Amino acid sequence: MNDLGRIEDLPKDYVQALRDQNLVPLWPSLRGVLPPKVPTRQTQPTCWAYQDIKPLLLKAGELTPIEKAERRVLVLANPGHGLDKMQASAAIYLGMQLLMPGEWAPSHRHTPNAVRMVVEGVGAWTTVDGEKCPMSRGDLILTPTGLWHEHGHDGNEPVIWLDVLDLPLVYYMETSYHINGERQAVVPGQGDKQYARGGVVPSHGFERSKKAYPMLRYAWQDAKAALQSLAADDSALEQVQVTYTNPETGGDAENILGFYALMLRPGQSLRLPARSPAQVFHVIEGAVQAHIVSSIFDMVEADTCCAPGYEAVTLKNPNPSQPAFLFIADESPLHRKLGVYENRG
Ligand code: 1HN
Image (tube, rainbow, N blue to C red; front, side):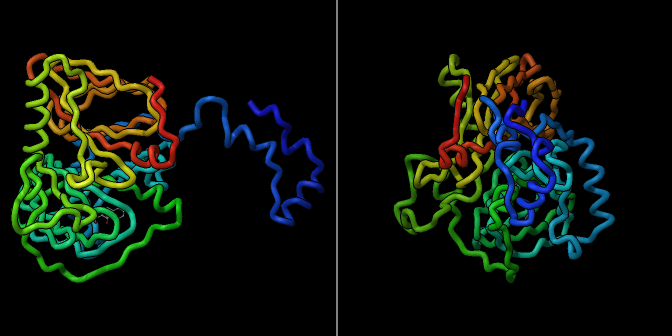
């Protein structure tokens, strides 16, 4: 693999003389940082079963009060990166967060972008930039970079959601920090109501392009209805998928990670091409078998898995009579902006 000469081939005193000057020879490491044809990926195909996470998360609820934790989260860490790194992939962080009835996770803002995918429970809400977003199963709620956000819970059962952040990238760039704030005043006017139907928008009471992130909550019932009507409209459509977008720009909902909902028809097997971005798959409804490199994950509702970039993924719906629905997060907005995006088929 390394045919460019080894560090051991150099005189020890020469290597030490380089070190003393904070100098390093490139050639022994060149193949490592620039491997032939395919990048080295630490990201391993990994699956986290919700039935394994949930009891441990509920236990965290008993062990650690919210006042002490601020955010009560178990991180879904990819062993390929090392568990301490808290990374699912190079750019993606995943965590399962628990909020118990009556608890409040105080207001703060930070540079990493986040989204929440609600997994279980009713009665919780997230206030983002003054907009109070109710949290129901399958809803996607954005907390983009710099916006104040806090979580509360008026219901009477535990609420659990999946956090997806671009924290590993923002941390790597030495740009990750947070600021604590006061409880937010809730302001009227909800982006998810104003933009609920593409093509018809309110004539009064809102202005275009005032906000960088005009829509913060994407209700699952709307995304699911969109998928079902796409599937019904064209029975030959193979990839029944929607992208969560900024309704003003038409671009991705956030700057770094991309978010999508996918419907697998009953019994469908779908091959996703080998593309450069790493991906995360989370089952919202139904069952999904994911083939990723040499791993096969049999996933049920609320299970989550990740796939490295540059690998094709095959998703199968084993149920012959019911569709399956997945939430997908990937690194493609980042890859496109950086000019490294590839689709290798
Ligand atoms: C964060 O602010 C939240 O606001 C959740 O709920 C998870 C992980 C890392 C850094 C900040 C939240 C987070 C986080």
